[in-house]
Image (tube, rainbow, N blue to C red; front, side, top):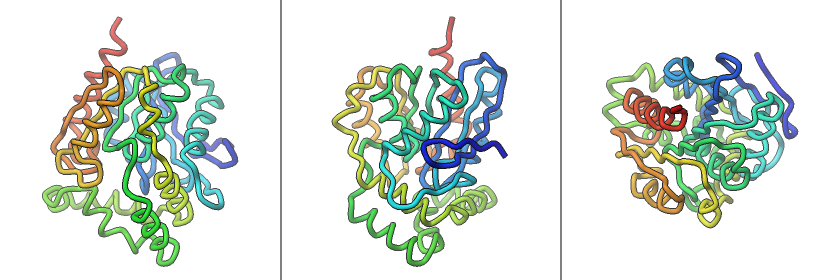
Length: 263
């Protein structure tokens, strides 16, 4: 199980593919682990080295005490890249992972070749919502929020027709460490990136789920409007757009990345 000590935590990661190929780095959402990208990894492994990792307090990465800041999570991503000798990546992040990508690209433009922001925003939710979520998981564990979260992550049709896949993702959420989840909730609660993402210069694609109640398409349009040259795509899915709309997601991301790597 590959682990690296980075920024005060032990990060679990998987780095697959041919050395020398451009690196595609995936960053997962709050409450999931690197297996969130299982439907993307085989699709892109022929052209890219794929770097996936569990955020602190998620999956097989260790948790750190107390609340986290978005700067901590960006520091983890940068530290992992540095430890692996990766200078530049095509970065694709979903929800929380998308917020990490925004700050990374705005503050460290030399490290980001392109940016794909999925089901995210420059500010997500109100402080009160996140305080309630933190209190619930610290008091009663992950079971306290699982049903409401799954209802936001997938449409009712997908939950009914793809029950096995939904259970797989549900297990990721239930296996997440409450302290790590709460720490990352605090990072989202306190992050307002709307003022700094105008500094992003990397080619940017924003992917929304048409039925996403968390970050609906208008939020992705707002996000794209703050980044020079950013484009948007709306897919038939709720929040976990890469899972529910797998084929359309892979096609959309693949065409965007092909443009970036065209000779």
